[in-house]
Image (tube, rainbow, N blue to C red; front, side):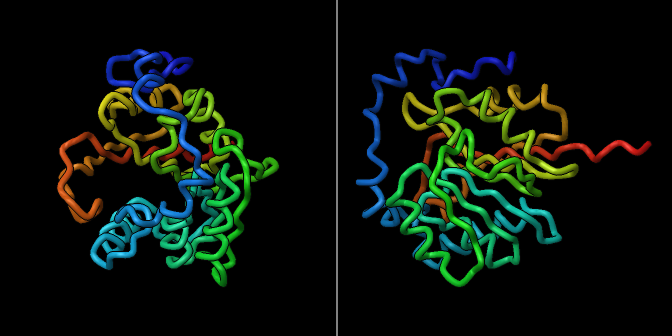
Length: 218
């Protein structure tokens, strides 16, 4: 697949995606965002399930992690708890406000900005993490290229995505889009683990972990 284009609907029609859902006011959504089991991770079983997955996806050694479209910071909190130095970014000031409160005392930095072009001023990271973000971006291919450019040698791009009704990105399209960037790409199905969502789900939900190559010697 040409990385210059990623369709964000199963049928490949941009109009279908626009017709299927109205624009979301994320500032308004912030007040109730954590009520969803997989957002707030308030249920110990759901939180433990995400902590288990995150531990498997992240490098064993701690490093600098960039959480894009962080929402209220639930995954950032898990990463910080494992010792990673977290920078979290969200476009919604209300989400950022809640993330800062949730991450208080962890040393995490929470910034207001566009996930596609995060305001990190040329910094590089060991991990770039984005959950349920790529599908909503106007230029997902451009965002993927930019995120990849921010990874250090051996760094990891961790994407949690899915298809909900007529919107989303099927796993095959996302893995194909990542292929031209190089590195090793691994797919992990998440739909079958009800613990992650607080209920059984029958739609497509998955993670893709792409590892950048090591720096060349000489």
